Length: 260
Image 1 (cartoon, helix red, strand yellow):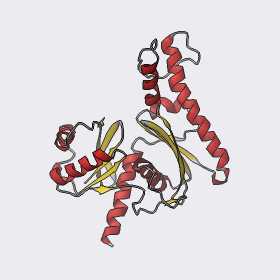
Image 2: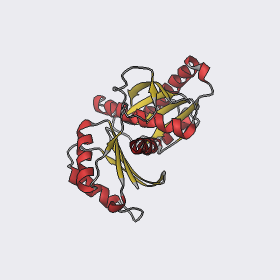
Image 3: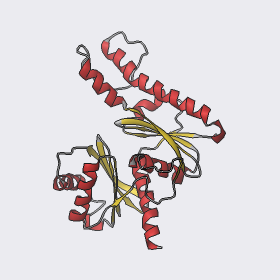
Image 4: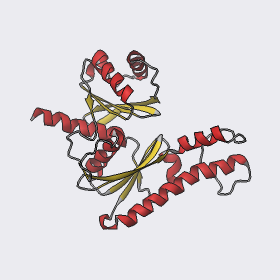
């Protein structure tokens, strides 16, 4: 079994894979104040009967938080007796890039691009709804074409709640109207539909600019993709485990190349 770890700015997602199938996964808040032992205790407390600590063969990490990268590497060595594999844009997994030095590309974008290339084998726009909302394009030949990074919906909403004295924080749910007749409905429309409209506009511009690559799938992932997808008609499918699937698939490639 492999333990894959996707370390984001807001959440950490862990998955256990057996023969390329995710058999367990968990999501918890990113907290740089936690120690490696505390993260391991949390991971162990969420574990169920589908896996045992002793059954972990490899630990693979994709991270956009450098301090936590080092912490989870230490966790892997101490508690799993494994040196963790790190996935980044320099990893030799077969992806190609349109720039000579792709080091600025986040590990999550690499994982998403690799997952789409291997799982769907099509030209695709990938939308990941996280702390940031990212849109990226990958070709059916595995070329990373570039990315757009915008504030995430919850990130933008938190800033609004903090800066606007008369607007209280609300639960972000699906808006039922475009024009609100009360503060809550007006905010839901602006926050949720506003974010969706922004993403849809980006997608339409990308489809125009890269018309020669059609057909192009539009694939969404991220914790709030179900909330936003109904307002983004260009989305063709939602893949909730896309990022951790990409980490697992990349790990297989890296491990197999080491055996050659």
